[in-house]
Image (tube, rainbow, N blue to C red; front, side):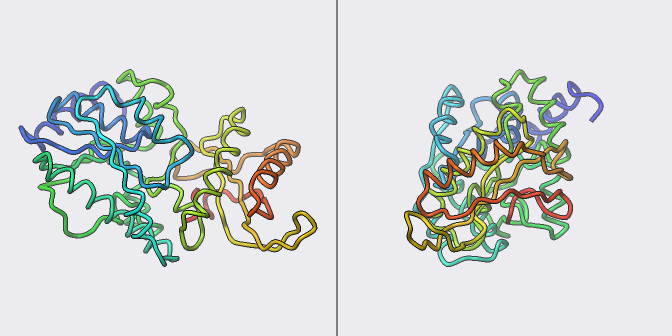
Amino acid sequence: MNDVKKFISVAVDSIKNQVGSNKAIMALSGGVDSSTAAELAHLSIGKNLIPVYIDTGLMRENETEEIKKLFEHMEGFRVVYAEEIFFKSLSGLTDPEEKRKAIGKTFIREFEKVASETSAKYLIQGTIFPDKIESKGGIKSHHNVGGLPEIFEFDGIVEPLCDLYKDEVRAVANELGLPRSISERMPFPGPGLSVRIVGEVTQENVSVVRAANSIVESELKDYAPWQAFAAIIGKATGVKGDKRVHGWIISIRSIDSRDGMTARAQEIDWDVLQRIQSRIIGSLPSVTRVVYDLTHKPPGTIEYE
């Protein structure tokens, strides 16, 4: 993308041409991709845009409250609380692809409910180019691409950012005047914390990884990582209070990247890593080990599933 202003003008016209005078649901997560797509769509179709944020129960700590504050100024903005439905869809699933597809299907069905209530005909998503590459290349099915069900009730899906990389999306966001709290926001996967849990997703292990993730983000903010987070990668034996505990293994991941297609693990000071593990182990009784992931991308992906 050589000309950001020209891209915005073309994108606004393209959305209008696709949606026409119809209403459209905006799948809004609060990340830079969906927020930028929402701003483009709002410039294009105005009051016919219905921004919808779905609380899946798989969000980061205080995520829903923060998103509500950021977007409640948008006319028609609504929050759908669907934690019970999403956990039910994930029950018993351990395969990463099955989990992603279950989440993609559940998202679409929840958006369809809102569309039925509002007579919306289109769904607008913040899909970007790496989402398409990884889904079609068989690396992993992004919930908004390969994870979508084959049949849905929308007349069409609109993806104004689908040919851009993350750094290009940030440039568009800045040109649109979005606050840096959005334009420079750390990426967060659409399937939420479910892809930061290797194996079956339960309310118990989600609460653990959510708390650990909050500690990691706060401790590593001075390193300005492209992405930093905690993940549950299994269980191991430990000793807590002179008792044997078979608890969770938390992996810390902190990487630098330009567009998410490649990434390098950051070098973190030993005392910082020790402080992180001490906080996690000390505050979460069911965690017995904390490790640091040194893997670059490739060969590893950024997220674990």
